[in-house]
Amino acid sequence: MNSIFKAYDIRGEYGSQITEEIARKIGNAFGSFIGSSPIVLGRDVRVSSPSLCREIQEGIQDAGIDVITVGPVTTPALYYATGALEAAGGLMVTASHNPGKDNGFKLCGREARPIGSDSGLKEIQSLVESGRYERAGRSGTSSVNDIRKRYVEHILSFAKDVGPLRIATDTANGMVGTFLPDLLRGLPLVEAKSLFMEPDGSFPNHEPNPLVPANLDPLREAVRSMGADLGFAFDGDGDRCAVVDEEGTTVAGDLLTALIAREMLQRHPGSPIVYDLRSSQVVADEIRAAGGEPVTERTGHSFIKAKMRSLDSPFGGELSGHFYFRDNYYADSGLIAMVEIMVLATKMKGPFSEIVQPLRRFHTTGEINFRIQDPDAVMAQVEEAFRQESITRLDGITVRMEGWWFNLRKSNTEPLVRLNVEGGTLQAMEQGLERLQKMLGTPI
Image (cartoon, rainbow, N blue to C red; front, side):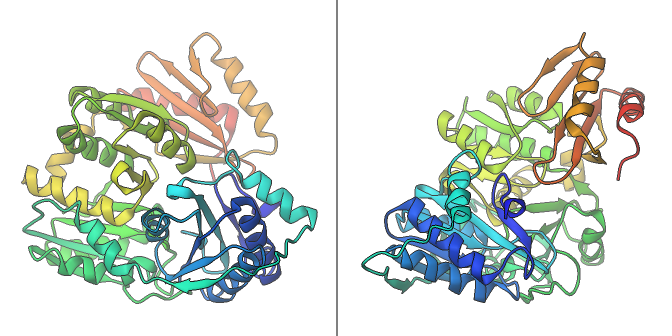
């Protein structure tokens, strides 16, 4: 049981780790933990999601909690519904970008506040593992609320003067395909070519993970063939967005954070902007240049959202393609990110590659994974090797030296350590990586 409870959600292989029996227990524990009504319940398109969703619902209602079902939706739509319907909590049945054989659950509280290991997930895990199952004297009620139209209107509220633009999209047979047509109808100056729009939980064309470079190949081809200005790819549950420019070149998530931050700071001058510590130095530089306050936070949506709330920050971004908006209950949304990128592309004009090029002034490895049997021992070894340098320990260790820096942190789910290296020159980055690989071994 312990293996399915991650830092930010619950996830595992359907049939062996995630079953209907476990789903019912998790639903009951979640209902007991929330303790008030209603809870909003949604699901993705995976083959196992309908049956898991039914058991989750039964478990919640057995705890005496009312349920509002919103049907097959994106995770951002579930977050929006939780906030807009003033619900006590929300639960999404999804395994996000994982392969179709997996499934899981994402949980949130009132106002779409995330529930992770530091904010209630451990307590829910304890309830499940204790075997306790609450049966209230009154079973919770069930109702249906189709929030699709309302959510699309909400996304369009971010679309200020978009177009004319030509775009290509790849929804990877995931949940975004159920919202995108209505959204595009509300953007009459946008011409779009859409790939893999039909929701299919077997993900027949490619896995719904836009961070894997090969998964972007169909989008690159579509962009080039139609002469598009931009291409957008989404993961299975729609909370991440990846972007390629008119040449089909991937624009990293941290560079997109810098670009959207500039747009947000025009609307909210002097505001703090939150970003994860793996991001390029260019993010902090661009935020300061735009008059904002750069704020670094640990990787993970629960940490980014909490920091944004505490600072009343209008925007936050992660290297992984999660982008967060204060006016969206501080939650992430791949489609809102797409709209905001189209807003700035319309405003700045010119090829998107030229808009991005000035931000490519550092050399970075991107995130590299190493399989390590004893991550703690290796982390300690690396820290000792760089003990004379400037070290921060917000998430793993971040070490800054003359000309280059790196972050090394443990995976929350696997015996891996994750490394990001950046240098002011290509030589500095490569030399730093070579030095670290002597201690870490060969990346996977």
